[in-house]
Image (cartoon, rainbow, N blue to C red; front, side, top):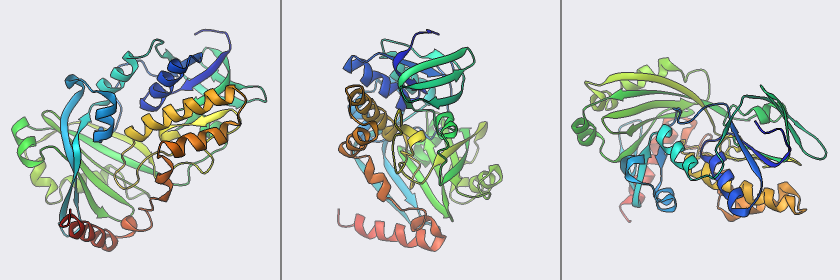
Length: 345
C-alpha cells in the first residue's frame, strides 16, 4: 500500500465505491480505493438492476444473468400485481457485476482491512492491517456494517437482517415459473420475501426488522405456497446473510471529512431492498461533493445538493416500515390498491 497521503480515500470497492472512484478519476482527483476483499468476490445480494441502471451502464451480455421485466408483488392473500419497467432491467451476480465496474477504473483496489477511522481537523486517518493511512477526505462505501460509521459513532436507526438461499433449478423451470420478474412477497410484519431468477438458479430470501427474521424464517418462506411450488425440485447451493439499512439516507450525509455512500449512507429502497442503483448514484454524488470540498466548499452541504440533484433524497420520504410493512393487513391493502391503479395504466 502506498504510504503517501492521498487527496481522497474510498473505503469499499462495491458499486458505490467503484462509482465514486470512477467519478474521481473523471474529475482528475487523486484517490485510493480500498477493500478488504480480493476481486472478483461473491456478495450476498438480490442482484436487481432497474432499467435505468442497465441503460446508463451499457451492461455487456455476459454480466446479465437474466433480463428483468419488472417487479411482481404478492399480498398475504395471494393477490398479485406486476409493475413493468419501460425497458429491460437485469438480475446480476455481484461477483461478475462488481468486477465489471472495477475493470473500467485506471487504478485498481488495494486489498487491506481497515479496523478504524479517525477524523482529524486537516484530514482522515485510516487504521489498516498494514499501518496508518492518511487522506484529506474519505468516501465511506463500506456497506451496512460500515467501519467508518461505527468508528465515528454514527449508528443505524433501522438495520434489517436478510437471509437468502441460492437454489439450483433447471433453466426451463426458472423460465416457466418465474420468468423475468423479481418477485416480492409481503407476507410478514416488518419485512418481506423475494425470488430473484438467475441462469439455472433462483435466489430466495427474506428480510426485515426484529429477531423473527432468521434462517428459520427463510425455511418457512420457501415452504409457503406459491413459493414452494416455484422452487419444487430445487437444490440449495448456499446460504447467505447480510444487513440492509431500512431507515433511508442519513439525516446528515457527511461529517466534516467523511461522506457516506451506498448502504453505508442508507441509500436503499425499503420496500424491495433494492440498493445497487442507489449505491452507484450516491457514490458518484459523493465524489462530486468531495471534489467541491477540495476547492473549499463545506462537504455536507455540497453532498446534500448533489444527492438531491441525483434524486436520491426522495428515499427519505418512503415510509414502508410503518405503513405497508406494519402488518399483513396493511400489505394486503397496499397490493390491492396497486392492482386497481394498474388497470388504468
